[in-house]
Amino acid sequence: KQWYQRRVRGHSDTVTLLLYTARQCRVLSEVLLASGQSDDTPFHWAARNGHTDTVTLLLDAARECRLLSEVLLDGDHDDFTPLHCAANTDTVTQLLDTARERSELSDVLIASCNTDYTQL
Image (cartoon, rainbow, N blue to C red; front, top):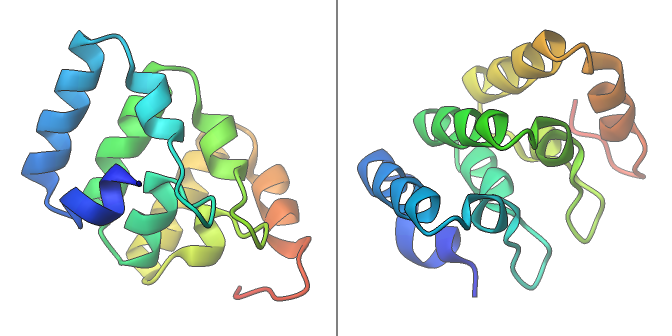
């Protein structure tokens, strides 16, 4: 079962502790890429629920693991990326700024438009 959906729900202090523990156990990459039944990752859940502080923590951890491209482009069972799921403009801006910083903005936007339903 997905740790983010069941346990965290946007509490950034809890996310900080979980990410710290994952680092210490050397499983940070696995935690960041964990997905549930609908292939939602912690990024999808945080973005969907407007937990911008949590998205920041997760993006920083992904940057540390060199997984930014993977998490920004990762689709759920409907091929929705975290950008599709973003619930507020702060989260959208944060995801786009991160993609721009990585010179992957066009890839993220293309991935966001390659579904039958686009929320942009």
